[in-house]
Amino acid sequence: MATTQGKKGINQDAMTVWEDFAGEKDVFFCGVFDGHGPSGHKVARIVRDQLPIKLSTAHKLLQMKGHSMSDIDAFYEDEGGALLQAYPNTGKTIDSRHDRDNYDPNSVLHLWKAGLLRSFREVDKELSRDPTIESYCSGTTAVTVVKQEDHLIIGNLGDSRAVMCTRGDKGQVIPLQLTVDLKPSLPREAERVRSCSGRVFSLEEESHVLRLWLPDEDSPGLAMTRAFGDFCLKDYGLSSTPQVFYHQLTEQDEFIVLATDGVWDVLTNFEVVKIVSAARKRSHAAKFLATHAVRAWKSRFPSSRTDDIAVVCLFFKPPSPGKSMSEVSHITPDSLSHLNSSVSQHTYRSISSDAEEGFDLRDNNKGKFQDIPEDWGEGESLVDTSLNFPRYTNSRHKGRPTSKSADIDF
Image (tube, rainbow, N blue to C red; front, side, top):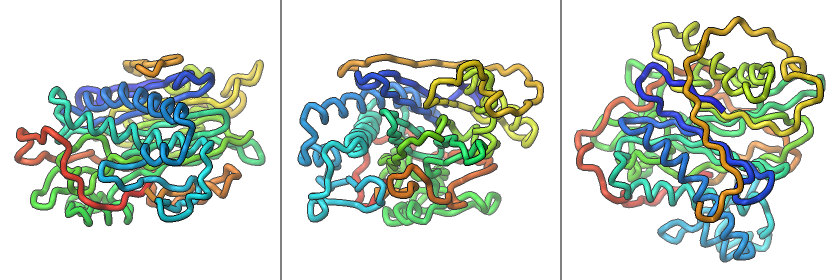
């Protein structure tokens, strides 16, 4: 993994990799977090540190309770008693009224999804009650992946992204985007915001960028619809409920890249997997990608301030004996200028217990993905996450805003 500071001030990106996650051998947890707002760097680091611990604890509790349906219900239930669960891989929601006979208590996805929904909610709640962090107008994205055997379970908030590299019939690299960029341009996201009295519109000077605004004030203009923190908007449609995705690995799948928008704003999905495939050593792959992203910012947008970058690369197979990655998928990169990066690594082993209607991208259980809609956010997009802050920023809510009823996709 690697991170590099942009030209906008303090590095607000964070990342983490846990091996033997939740005390289970060969289970991995990875995450990247892109903070925004005055204290975005603090929010990102708090979430980076607390989310894996909450998820590990939740997963262990579910295993100890024997995976009963009532136990899963308790983990899926929100504070108002509404069930938040959904069938894996179908996009169908379920509740206590129907379809419960088809529940598989041993489903890997059900267990991890329950834990993800619970842990995301708990982290956001604790963040709202922390007087040492200004999270009223500061927040962070989160894209996380749990790998257990051949299962990938991805949780996502905001516009950081997870992209997997697989191989085609002729050995060519193929990118598969595993997450949706959760922005106001998505009709269902905008509908939820409007149903909670939030506003979605673009400014005249950036007509291509839809933003989330307060009902009676032209602020903060957040460019995403789900995030930790940003409690000024939590009453008005901003959600901390992650979308959860599942993918079953195949022999053709090679690695997954988690990265903040400092990468995706200047490199396409294909460019990203091609660059990572060309790294001579896996241990250098994330830094290699970050270096290319920095160079892309300078060459494509010389008048723009480079964004912060955080990258995690998780490989699924051991390397082929005697072959470097660049021999497997050869490209000749230009000579690279020195990258002034500060890589903050947080890798752990065997941590202890102390320590919405979803998009279904797969074709049944075959590990294949449907075509990716164009409005996922592929390609170049130079956007400030938020534009300004409410007049009453200093009178920050001390507790979580009162929830309004709205359907949440996950």
